[in-house]
Length: 294
Length: 307
Image (tube, rainbow over all chains, first blue to last red):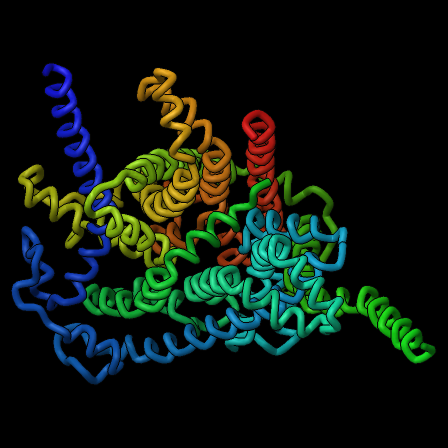
């Protein structure tokens, strides 16, 4: 009797604690994001309300119109100085850069990882060192020499400077993760295919690549996120061609249009957030495999 | 017979050719580009740090250790180091502890778990620059959510300019970094928790181990390698963070949030003193690598003991 009574309380306390913790998680993650979202749907006067309207009383999409259309959408007060006219081109650039980085990274990194994995190379440790190095090096510290090199190649202030830089900075990680995949995958089957007279390329295409798809997706998603988010190189190697440095430049305006900024931010995080949610599983796998296991 | 042998040796020859050339061809693009874009700038930076670079006259002179001596005798560097150590202390502890709590929560079975797991990814999916912006917005003195929340709850009757206070500015910039890093830590720890075989717990129960003992000898022991990796990443972030702090405070108020990375930016892009900038970046790289190596050693040791 007393045993079941104690157990009953135990369950109640446990589930209560669980839901309190769950609420804390929701608040911790959700509160900053929620506030940005409601700001993006408010007018400037409503933002001044004290205490704030936690649910917008007069929701408006004017901020989004302003960002999407550039300067012409809304007129009034200190708005419409055309500050958002560069937003959509920047988002387009971000998209192009990110997609190119994903493909280049998968091709170059995949080739190298396959070589490390299949040809009894003793160089694999270099890839490992490369991963560690790119994780520990301050990217800032390479910027001046990098700038000089890219200027010689006439790539400064082009998206190619970013495509090149991002691809190469993520390469070691890609090689590291994909090599692990290739190492464990279908070596026997591949060798059987080779004995049966398939060429290396055929064996790779028919046997290895299909089995490595989860790894390729994980790496692809991670490089997409990196490329979309990168701020510092985009700031210094280009004139704010992509989304993150452009956000920074809005932040630095004398009169910050917070509502418009919130809308611009929201639009710009839709791609990475969508990608992260859709490929959640692959991402988690890639993250834990990329966290070098020593 | 003769043709069969011939084709056999041809196949062998081809295989031989495969072995010899293909790996190099496959590796070439990666190695060449990594060399050009990462390694050669790295070497250049090291060389810069021993030079005085006169941008106006376009003249580079070797000055030995002068940049380092100037750096170590400047008040700014020690201030930045102090700020950075405080910053790193928060960025290491907060994400590790809260991340561990979230991971332990999300491995439990309850309604809402899958929502929690999905939402957990959200901060990690946001660019650092957006994270800085969100938190900047949170602590804003005029419209900030934190002020709004405290006001709504009746805890304050006047909005507080949090970021004007030197200590609070450092705490909030560190918390912004901790916020995103918490998700990263929790994701890694959760993935590790999910691999613990359930029968370990059952066996421990049969042996009469209480909840605490089970946590210590199963959960914690199992998590230890991952926990060390998480700590490593948090330490590295604590020293290399730039984006989120730069958008929030640009190092201010005063020098209250001037991390070493911010100091590096100042030397390089505001003073255009490339030699000093390079010296700072080398020192920063060495600090990060040094702390990183300590953690890597810990990982090896913990693997030796537990695996």
